[in-house]
Image (cartoon, rainbow, N blue to C red; front, side, top):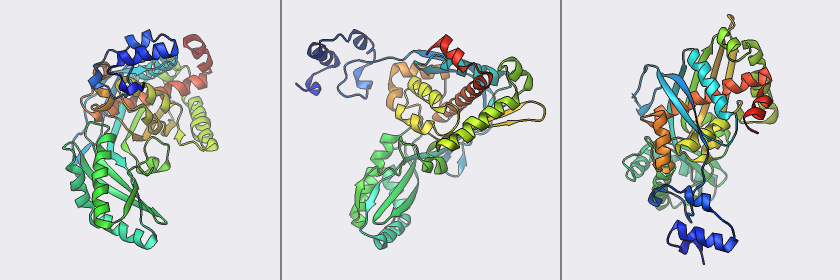
Amino acid sequence: MRLSQFKNPKERLKYLENELNIKLSYVEKALIEDEKNINCENLIGATTLPLGVAGPLIISSVATHFAEASRVKKALEDKKNYYIPLATTEGALVASVNRGCKVITLSGGAVVNVHRVGTTRGPVFYTGGIKKSNLFYKWIKENEKKLGRIAENTSSHLKFIKAGVRSLGYYVYVRFYFNTGDAMGMNMVTIATQKIVEFIEKETNVKCLSVAGNFDIDKKPAWLNFISNRGTKAWAEVVLPKKIIEEVLKSNANNIFEVWLAKCMLGSAMSGSLGFNAQFANVTSAFFAATGQDLAHTVEGSMGITFVKPLENGDLYFSVYMPAIMIGTVGGGTKLKIKQEALSIIGAKTSEELTEVFIATVLAGEISLLSSLEEGTLAKTHERLGR
């Protein structure tokens, strides 16, 4: 019997227990959500992750969020205190981020800036040769506004931004950018792009080989996302006073700088890494798991640059940049009540505000880990708090 033929998760689970001669009692007990809110096929139950909280973390925003291409929606805001839920099985991670939050808050808070680039979908078309590829490129550009109207008819929450075109022989790749509001929006843009593709095929007689041609580029590390960005790009910075570095981090600006240079810059260059940072993926995965984000977008969340510079007075400038953050406050896993409770800990009202908290949390993680590496306590901390 196929698993999909069972009427509910409990019947499916009991069948597996009998078939495999195992017990899944904890998997069964962990399912506390209404099945209609869950996007998971052949559902049998749930697994859980321990949830820790870091903070408080002071953040002030200078974000320029463009609700429309020409209109700034949000300007400078007052500083706010945030607590951050982190779901992880890695000992020392929450403690590390918490220490970073403490240092940032004692230093007056992090300054953050976020800018929506747009969720992308990138189909690939077959033209038959470079002459027709050139004609196809011109057609896309001449009809871009019409394609935008077709996309926007699929959802009142979606706004078409632009189309980027690249060709290789008889293949043409088109990268469509969309503003998806407070949703991360991959499902939304896939549906919109499918409608665009159908119109293009009808009008040009050019065949679409795949609605997703890896020109998106979705859930894979790529320089295109690093350079042209995806979702939201964001920055966070703080100046750590000399006294706090010495008393809390047990280090100094020059020593932390040397570790940053050798590890994040030169070590990343030696390895050909797309992540010039210490642990973006650690914080991304824990933050995403806690708040109901698509965990595969940890890939984009692993990319970015940490920048450190000692100041003449012994203070330390510390900054992070992330070029492709895929995050939202509605849709997907955020519908689950347990994720909504975790989101309520943060209290972010929009996806922009959630991104601000996220980038500041990444900054906290970088500060703590680099100083721990300099101090030589990383192994000791993991031995004490978790292997």
